Length: 239
Image (cartoon, rainbow, N blue to C red):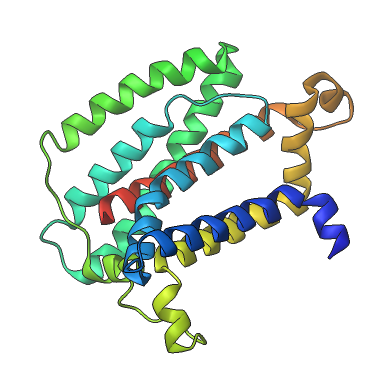
């Protein structure tokens, strides 16, 4: 425990602050319950994925201004494809949209590596391109999300292994966020790829001299950013 507090003290501090704010809110508004907490988690979910998308790129020493536009494009793509479609068809839409985000993110990285134009310029240009593409896909508000996809976030699907009182209070949106981050982030932190991303963000020249494939690592970092942006886009579709 002491080692965790030394290494991740800020995480413990954030959790303590969250609990404190929850207690204060409960005292001020006694009617605040699990439904309100779940609504808050669902509202935060797209922003959390956007932060994750930007974090990967920043760790690699870059910046991605196209994250919001990529979320918009993946969101309207998913909404338009699932609108009026069967529930089974949505099982194809979700991986398609995730792959779409992965490819768009990798395209950002490839353009940056090949042209050697600064990240901020390439991603700013991509922002306008993706915004235009989103308007072409869905020019006005509309579309829909599959019922099973909404149920997995809104909370009608129980979490296996949790008692009823905990299942009522633990937002499904929070569970989804933690699962997605663990699947992608923990292997990233503990793998050779993760160390390479940290290395090029710290000192690109030193990383290159140490044998790190800088170009490939930068492309992968942007691809992961696109994947998180696509997850954020899907969460926007659900909401």
